[in-house]
Length: 177
Image 1 (cartoon, rainbow, N blue to C red):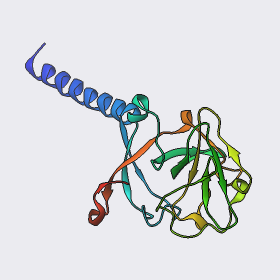
Image 2 (cartoon, rainbow, N blue to C red; image 1 turned 180 degrees about the horizontal axis):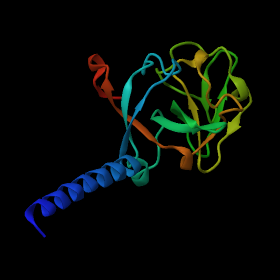
Image 3 (cartoon, rainbow, N blue to C red; image 1 turned 120 degrees about the horizontal axis):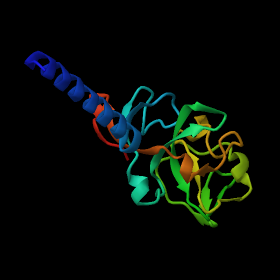
């Protein structure tokens, strides 16, 4: 084999390895995603570009207030981004004044942008199964989330990952909270 052919084979193998590593990284470790919509205002804004941690939940369980990405059950090509409010085994209820209760204790949180006007199905207590989570958008009155039957409780196996880092806009570059 002459030197030119060996060089070509080497370049092709190198490019193939880069493509394989990129695929594996995106599939199992992290991926980039863009925020579409206003349901997470003011924490995340329409057009924000994020890195999603896909590895962390293989090591530990999702935590209350994590921001997670999951497919919309009526259209799996569409992904939602919401904040975890209720954890497996807990009971979530939202009263007529917009207060969130977990196991009948008032939830202390500062993420909601406004008083909840419609508690949806959480007006009655919602008890989560052993692998279910109750999620809500921070823009509470403009979010389709676990309060609706269309979204409902989210199974752990449906969670793609946790919003971890904001790439863009550069003025908000850094970790997502």
